[in-house]
Length: 45
Image (cartoon, rainbow, N blue to C red):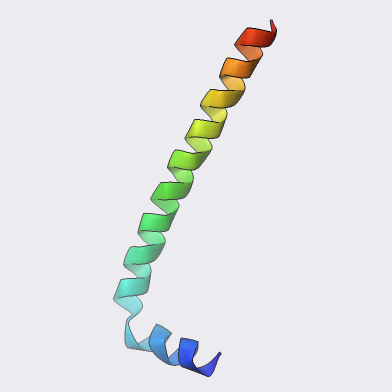
């Protein structure tokens, strides 16, 4: 926990970059899920 806090203060920019990348990945993932749900609905009807 202490080491993590030190690393966090040491490279905030890197963590922000990583968070940005992560949120992009999550958006892609959610979009894929939405497309899958839409496809399932169109098959079901």
